[in-house]
Length: 81
Ligand SMILES: [Zn+2]
Image (cartoon, rainbow, N blue to C red):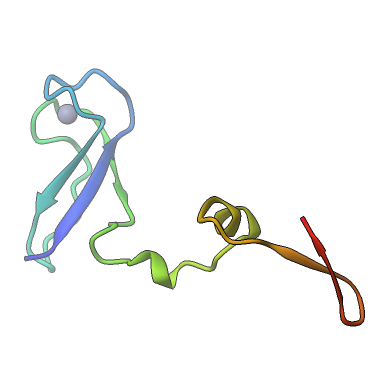
């Protein structure tokens, strides 16, 4: 059974966690309410099933990851941002 990550739409769950992970059958309908506090929850795109590799890398992501981002200013010339 895959893991699904959910986030509370409002804070105040007695679990003390805004986000939680549940293991559910693939064909089970998504949770709409927290099983603990019965408050509405929304499903997150699970980090377990979507590796970061699939995300398009933005310039700011690249910088955060330590890449040097070069801007092409002229043919054959690059400016260090
Ligand atoms: Zn809750």
